[in-house]
Length: 64
Image (cartoon, rainbow, N blue to C red; front, side):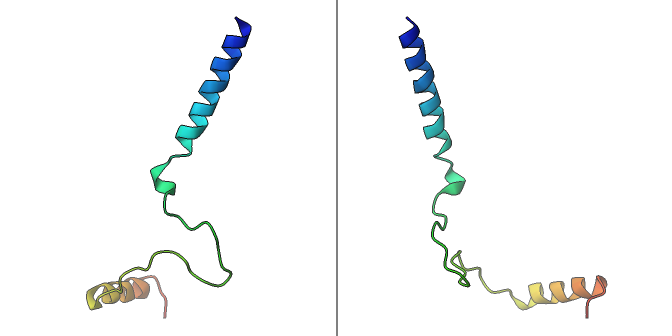
C-alpha cells in the first residue's frame, strides 16, 4: 500500500509541474538573446496626436 501512495504522490507532483509549464503568457517568447539586439515584437509608430500628448506630459513634468 505505501508504494501506491508514493506513486500517486509522484504522479500528482509531475502533473502539477506539467500543467504549470503550460502558461499561455509564456508561449512565443524569446528564448535566445543576442547582446545589443532587440528581439521582441515591433510596436506600431506613434501618430502625431500621441506624440503631442507625450510632449505635453513631459513639459508638465519639467523636462526640457
